Image 1 (cartoon, rainbow, N blue to C red):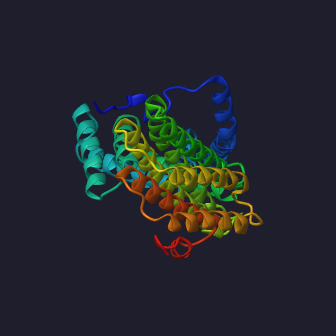
Image 2 (image 1 turned 30 degrees about the vertical axis):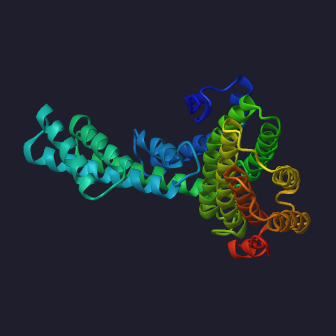
Image 3 (image 1 turned 180 degrees about the horizontal axis):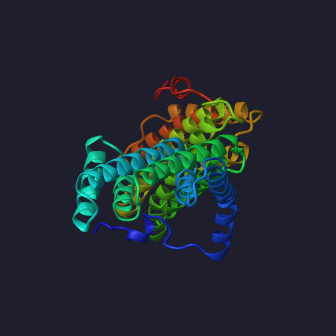
Length: 367
């Protein structure tokens, strides 16, 4: 009977321990400081320079613009300003035409949000349009106050962008940490798959398969961290736009994603081999075992330019050995070997090679 892993083995961990929460606080501390500083600056500009008496939306817009991450700050700040403009404009117009009332509030909110949707705006624009229309029709006494709220939104959004542009990118989590963690997991999965095949250990094969599926959370985290750093670097004036570093990090993340997916297929086939008593040849298992050693070396030397040529040679040597083996008998042996070769190709890209250069170092079978 086919075995299916439980839901917990595939998704994100359901909770964080206290040490993990403390580390998370440490990672987000620079962002929290930026939000607090931006809120203070926006409030000061709105009161001291524009003369607004209650510019509560200026700090609010600054906090929303910076958000809870470094992703898409330009877009968030712009959406706040546009959403406020739509809501204030619609609210003022409706009140001017028919006067304030509950039915007018409902109408203004509906029209403002519908207009935002028709403009193909994002969720934040739609929500802000509705909120501001409601405030204008219920709390704001004069059209001038509505304009003041829009100016406060502009001040808050602009402040958020200035603070983001002047903030260093260094405190962000580096993708390297997640890459190394995933590589070490890959090496462990390869070793356990080999051990399960050699000993016909069905329980070990099943546990290894479940662990391989759980790597999806780490890959998702890697994609988020890589995108976060790329967005922050693109906005910051302290770092060149779309630097070579961010491009390399994105390429490495894509290559590692492919490598992990190929490892999952390999591990899944190892599980099937044990369950169906379809042995994988020993020479193929030794190759996978040696690949695990190289993956460990890659984890230790990743992102070290001096180690890249060495790691490249080690991976190329595994590729040459795999080509000399020939296609083994049995579907399991052939599948494991094919996936191991694909993993080698993907990992070669982590040493700075392009897809074509990596493929060139993996000879054809029997070559």
